Length: 434
Ligand code: FES
Ligand SMILES: [Fe+2]
Image (tube, rainbow, N blue to C red; front, top):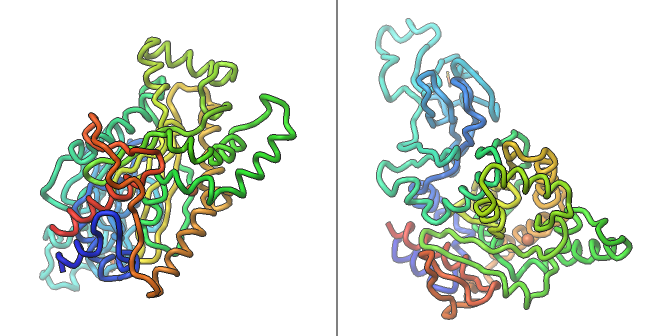
């Protein structure tokens, strides 16, 4: 079977079964999601003992909780009695998790602490039996407040796994004059009828933006044409930004790394969305608070790193400049849930946060005029790949022209190179052949 996996994704092309075969999906959950460090929570949601969020490791539902010992535990949201989900809420605070079916009680580290009417077992059950505790992730670690868990006992440490992508997390956090960011709880969830990889392949695909999103580009341009200079708001700038001519998209830097990670440079060239001008009073106030906190050189370094999407393989997409995050939850071979969230920068003007929320709404909400276009592509690709007309898809744009970069990865010869997709498949081959 291992040879078969490698045959299905040679460099530059992929067999359609990789998106449609439930057995391959199961193998991906085991070999990719079973070995990766996966984001499960932000510490601002679980600062106090008893606070918890629910999350997923691959398809497997989990609870992430701060225990009375101050540590964070990640354990299965599946009762060891007869399999009921122990916790139905997305987040909250509890002294213990009591299963809604027959009342078995679990502590916030997942250990079993109570069985109602336990004498029915005639002394033949031991509450302290570790097999009766909720099954823990093998490893839990956090990077500057971002909590990740890993099902595998062995493998790289979290910082080694993140590698160059720690810079994206650092930059998002350093953009806070107060040195911390806070997840505020809100966000969007959207389910699409397509494979999880379709979304990961889209996020750093500079070739699609002006074509797939033409309708919102054109509508935004028509509105902007009727406006005076300086009247355009962020959403309008975002919609227009996707219409950057392809020759200029080619000027944008695109980076791919071992491990499947990648990022793209920024492609907003004008207007308040670039955050480059002090003519905007919010930006001026923000810049002042950054300089007060970090000094001028360091503040300009942090704010001047102009990038857009950063992909942490296999399922996390960060946008540090706009404080956005997307997390993919694979459900089945042809179904995926996208969780979209944003962050508040401590000690930044409150309007910065409102802009981040507006950005999230315009780009990632189910009513967005941008992401809905992408999701229409994913749904239709999935339908087409299910049919057997032709077996292969092509990922060869830029192949052979990308070159090594001193950041340890490769840089695309042009911004529209499919380098990020090939980086993902290099990681896919590595993990699937283990
Ligand atoms: S299934 Fe949880 S107590 Fe029975
Ligand atoms: Fe898109």
